[in-house]
Every structure is written in structure tokens, then in C-alpha cells.
Length: 245
Ligand SMILES: NC(=O)c1ccc[n+]([C@@H]2O[C@H](COP(=O)([O-])OP(=O)(O)OC[C@H]3O[C@@H](n4cnc5c(N)ncnc54)[C@H](O)[C@@H]3O)[C@@H](O)[C@H]2O)c1
Image (cartoon, rainbow, N blue to C red; front, side):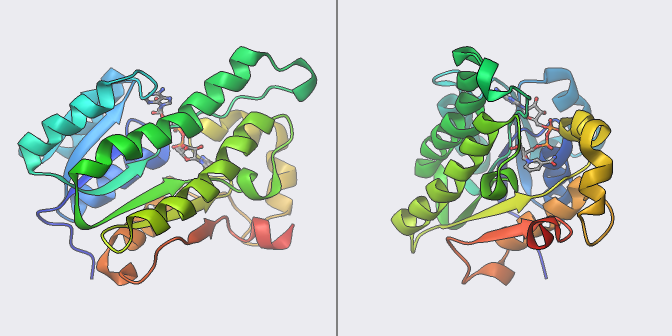
């Protein structure tokens, strides 16, 4: 039912976790890939593992640096003729209690998790082909907050509103949706799982953490024709943690 042959996915945060899982799944379903991340070696390793070099373009860059995304998408236009699916997945999750949070800590999180999503979408818009779709990644923290992560929670709450506003603006040409993952086992959550894992597991009806592949599956669904009448929506992927809390 899902076939991305001849279509192009541009994804940031592609070198790790959810971004890498999305890249692998779309590749498996025939998509061309534009892999963006600041971890150059990990990007190259992913591209090598995927194999088919003619369908994979690697863009090692920092999404907060002005002008680089625009250049990458110009290159995408020449190489693949445009973009069909955009997933800005680059993000950081760093603890910083409110009382001692510095301006720099606040700004670092907002600049990657929110500003760069805006800039990624803006840079991609002229290249997104009719019928294309954007899936942004929020978080359960954007709905219920995450202690010692006010900056992260604020950025993800903003992503929910940003995506709904954008969905209205670019319809009917494009669809824009959001996934809100709960606790997904990736490098991002290693410390969280170590410090608060037991308590979070006890609150999760499905009794385990999610996998990056399980988030990727929902993103692929939202980009596919199976979701052709779905826009401006958020799908929670959290094993029931949000519903139960
Ligand atoms: N893992 C979870 O439990 C979880 C839950 C909710 C939301 N999310 C969100 O999902 C997305 C992916 O998270 P993940 O779990 O795969 O994390 P991850 O740490 O495994 O991957 C994040 C990737 O983003 C890249 N990145 C960070 N800053 C960048 C920058 N300035 N420029 C370019 N690349 C940059 C990193 O190099 C890394 O490869 C993030 O937006 C995250 O907030 C994750």
C-alpha cells in the first residue's frame, strides 16, 4: 500500500534515531533520499549501509547555519527534480533546570528544535511538489511538559501550533502533520531512561519504550496516499503514556 518510488524524501537529523529509521523505511519503499545532519561520519555510514548511491544524496550540515538548507534544496532540485516529503527531525533534548538555565542553553534548544524547523520548511517550500507532505516531530513534552526541560517543552508545543498554521496555509497543495512521540529508545533518551525509566515504564500501558521504527511507520503512513485526507493533525506514538497520565 505504501510506494514512494520516484518520490524524494528530505530529512534532517538523518544520522541517528528516528531520522535514520525514517530514511531506511522510505528507502525500502523506493524513495530517493536527501540525508541532512551535522554528524558527517554517521551520515556517510548510513548512506553506505543503504547501498544504492544513485538514490541517496548526503548533506552534512548544521541546520542552524543560515543559507545551507537553501543550498542543499537547490542541489536536491537539480538532482531529483524536487521534494515530495519533508521531515525535519533534527533535535536536541538537554536537561537544564529553570532556575539556573542560561540564555545560551535556552537559545540552543529553541534554535534547533523550533527556529531550524521553520527555516527547513521555508527553504523546502519552493521545491515541494504538488501533493507533497511535511511531517514535523513534536513530543509528549509539548503536551504535558517535561520537568527540567522547559525549553524543550516550549519548542515542541510551538511545533504543534506551527504545523497546524502551516497546514492551513499550504493547503490544498501540500499536507502538514505532526507526530508526537513518547519515550522512544534512541541516543536522545539514554540519560532519561537511566534516570526516570522505571517510573515512566510503570506509567506506560504497553509496558515498554517505543522504537524508532515504530515512529517511522507512522511518519510513512502520514506521507503516503493512505493519509491523503489527513492534514493539520497530530498522531501520538507513546504506548499509551499520554492517555494514561
Ligand atoms: N527519542 C524520543 O523519545 C523522542 C521523543 C519525542 C520527540 N523526539 C524528537 O524526535 C526527533 C529525533 O530524535 P531522536 O530520538 O532520533 O534523537 P537522536 O539524538 O537520535 O537524533 C537527533 C539527530 O539530530 C541531529 N542534529 C541535532 N542538532 C543538529 C543540528 N544543529 N544540525 C544538524 N543535525 C542536528 C543529531 O546529529 C542527531 O543525528 C527530535 O526532534 C526529537 O526531539 C524524540
